[in-house]
Image 1 (tube, rainbow, N blue to C red):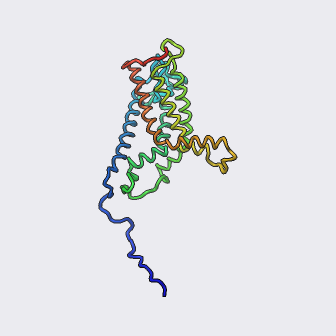
Image 2: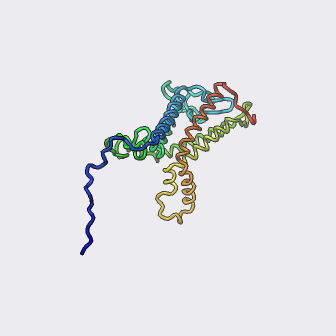
Length: 272
């Protein structure tokens, strides 16, 4: 005799279980998206204000230039702050002096894989947390406007590399003494640390990892690219931490330059 068959039970119909609660989680799942939103909003508000105020962004004695105004290539810029020359005439008051690169840096950050994850979950609630239903009726991903534009991230990466070179040049120029020649102060440490971390964030980008090691069928035939890809991959595991750290160092650098330029305190000097 054949073994009796087990009943499959009643069929489940209607898709997701009908639960009145948004989630059955009892922990503070909302805390992470809330902190992320507050952190991003704080930076955006601060950076926007500083980009438009046009004051206290340049310390002529030590050649300190805030990254929010680099490169400053307009005749509206403070004397001496135009390291690359003055390519344009006066900018109207509604136009930031760093407009040459700010849109590209904004695009690079907005389309960054980590930032997309951060603001998708915390701002758009897509989804806000694990096991928490999102409020959207349908999901189309990044296949339609405006989110399909996220695919241009790799091109923003190229511009970000150029901007990192400009920031490095600004950091070198900042080793200037009050009486001329070489000088070194606390501001130099802050500016250089910011540039190093910006390089680390830029090079840890997923696009950089793809550029260095993508489209290779055999790593053994490309040992140099394999080594570079390995180093970038190590940085890539810290991409989220670097994304947040560089927001902090950008604010710190700008705030320090602003306070020194405003005369709130003098830059502690170690040399000249």
